[in-house]
Length: 321
Image 1 (cartoon, helix red, strand yellow):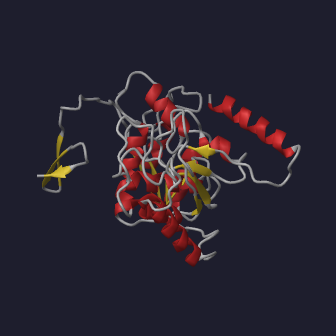
Image 2 (cartoon, rainbow, N blue to C red):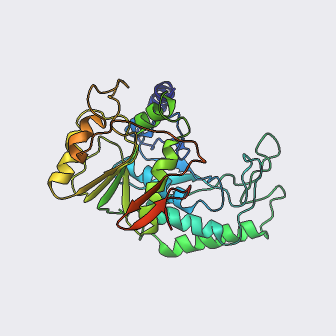
């Protein structure tokens, strides 16, 4: 599906180029979206854009993650937020309104993570179809005395005062997180391990820990250059392709740190299991051999002791007791 849709984009872009050789071409991605490998698409986009519709109004870390993912698609270049809503979405079972001030917070978060533009869907609420109740800058009557319109106008004034100061800005980082659609597909589709493991949830848990610690982070593809990073986090790196293992080793050889998780180093680029000790090509890097992998139901809790302290696994991470 990813390759077929990409070919359609390439064909559409070529048709546009027959009439316009200069106008930038993009398409709006949708956050962490499993069917499309953004890394394979990125080279064909003149700039990256995406639609920021978080699942809840408590998704600050997830939004930060996705902004960083978009920024990393073209080597740190600025991106656009192609869509966001001033008020509510129309695609959830329950569509709560953005509380006062949230639009400004989320928009400035976009800029802080590298956005050069923050746009809205939609300018005015449509008369019909499935998104007629989707939020807009102007409601069905076209009023300009609503809270939504005032907040958009105030935010526009903020951006006007900033001017060009933040346009084209870069966000240098010394830590990187590897995000890989092939590992996402392979780890979730394969039989025999744990079908309840969700790749985005595992990756986001590691990102959140760094984000809450204030660590500036790049999210990059597994084949991206790793020079200059002191820490590389590779959660659920289920598929090890090409020279990935060697490049991770080079990070450690020059004094850096590499962090990975369970289910990593299991298959090659054709999803064939490595005929070697788990974690395959990553075993020499981590100095471990995994003999057995156990998967437990969600209500079963493991307890461990470490340096005299006892921990138990919890849905929100290890808890000390």
